[in-house]
Image (tube, rainbow, N blue to C red):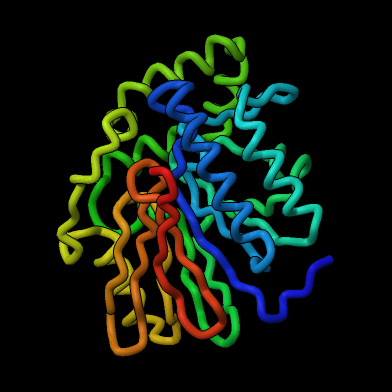
Length: 258
């Protein structure tokens, strides 16, 4: 088992493996594994903050085909003693127990407040938080309903996965992945996650960092003299992540050949 002394904690989100097509997804997967290789010697915990896959559904004996490079790397990291977490996102909310049992990834189904080196982190994927977006919140409640999940399991996996990938490959995220566009902008003070973090920080001023994925744009903004909001960006156009060294949390990028 590795020691956590002098080790860093890493956060990354929104890989959306599977879109826009096999070739582009595989290219990003290679790049992602190269990043994981680069941090293996200095990481104590790795937080994957959701939407690792663009579509994921676990049948009782079947999981989506592919992603073996990433899953193999994560399994090796977990076997070496690195603690790996997954906060389920809106694209991989149908992860049940396969990743926990087979790889050793700890699944988080709800937002959590965790403390590292005396700093408090509010962690979540970010979907459904804050005011508004009631249409999405309604759809999410349908997807999370256990009876609806039971019904979906009765579809043959080839049909279920084709349905999921059909809609994924026609999404805004798929178009960004296909074109490698980096022109997606945020007006941060109008963002639901900014409003949510600001209000939650006022109610709980002991929180030092709010860390979310979901929005696909890297952001590091102060909410107060003490508290910061970190949006992790993505691994479609930005290839960004956050690193906590025990003192501060910083956004960094791993561009390489991208």
